[in-house]
Length: 152
Image (cartoon, rainbow, N blue to C red; front, side, top):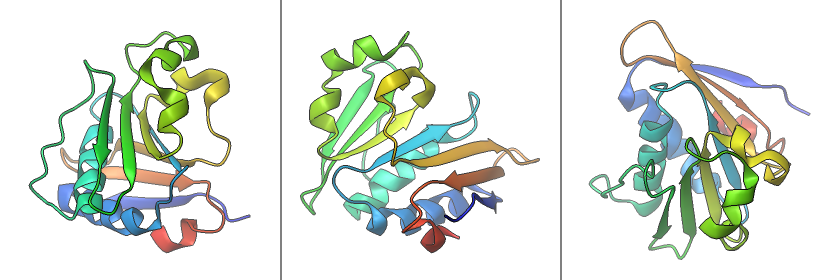
């Protein structure tokens, strides 16, 4: 099983390029779990990924901070559900948000530690950390032993 991959993303464009490499690898049932402190770039990565999946760099991608989930039916037919679980206390609240139905598509989850026992075992984990400058990030990816090398 391949180990984690660590990448330096010097700016938002590099974050977008990583999202662009991930987009064609996604399949229905996939989960991408986005970890990192406030301001680490989780929402920026999710926005870049949704735009890459839609093939539309101008796609309006609002943060789900207050709605908790934003759903997208993409031109390819792929459904993507972007969850921001920061305000949730735990997994009990996910049923009301349509978690079970969302798992038939792709889920992007910010603050995945709130998933508890609902955390998907076969997820791709992307951890973002500040990288020394305002826009730089350190990205660590793990999971997906059959696909992760395509993101290196």
